[in-house]
Structure formats: C-alpha cells, structure tokens
Image (tube, rainbow, N blue to C red):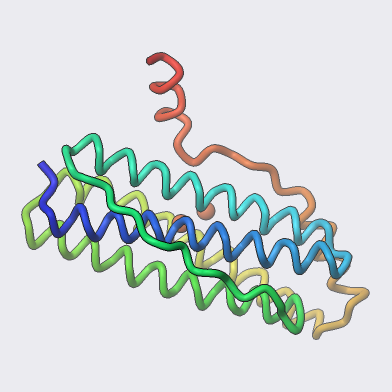
Length: 177
Ligand SMILES: [Fe+2]
Ligand SMILES: [Fe+2]
C-alpha cells in the first residue's frame, strides 16, 4: 500500500502534469495566434501527452490503495516574446519537472516502495526525451537566429507531429475492462 507521503507526492505530481498540459496549451495558443500552426500543433500534442502522464499517475495512486488529493492548477503565462522564448521556457520547465520526478524516485527508494520506484522509472526515462526534444528545437532556432522566414521551416517540421498514447497497454486494459 502507498504511504501517505508518497500518496501526497504523487498527487502533487499529478497536479504538476496537469499544469504542464495547461502551460503547453497556453504556449500553443500563442503560436497559433502568431501564425505558426505547426508549432501550435506540436505544443498542443505535448499538452495531450502531459494530461496522459497525469491520468496514468492518478491511476497508480488508486491502484496502490492511496488517496489522491486535488489542488488548484495555477494559471500559466499566456504571453511570450518569441518562439525562441517559448522553447527556452519549455526546456526550463522540463528541467524543473525532472527534479520533481527524481525526488519521487528518491522518496520511493527511501521507503523501500519498489512498486512505486519501478512505476516512476518510466517518468525518469521520459524526462530524458522531454529535455532532449526541447534542446533540439532550441538548437535549430539558434541556427535560424529568430529569422521568421526560417522559423517557418521549423513550423512545417513540427506540423508533422501526431499524438501517440504514451500508455497504449493501459488503454487496452481499460478497454478490455
Ligand atoms: Fe510529463
Ligand atoms: Fe514525451
């Protein structure tokens, strides 16, 4: 059974994943309004992925006999200076999320909760990808040097992203009842 401390830490992380979704949706709105529909698409899919991270973690709390707790989801910033600033903020946010996930991993180790440790490792690995995705896009923007015409190429590239459920097996379980 999940300890009270881990129940609280995981619930707070569910909230943080919902906040990530809200943040990326706000960034997507900014990109859309600025005419970058492809970048808006990428950020909107990222928002969906964050929701899936939150729901999956919430389900783990219940599965382990914990009690999920709920708090306010804070409002994300809604105005940005540039696409470059958006992705710099994505990276800074993902680095912050990695720290949070690492703390949960440390807490589950301290408590000898191997099931939660094993569960949270998926998120530890996911954070490697999340940070790298943001770094790669920032590197491309650095080459483009805030040139709107060139950013349009990035826009076309990011338009190609499609949503893949990060937990397809869990979705199949649910479907099978
Ligand atoms: Fe996430
Ligand atoms: Fe991801």
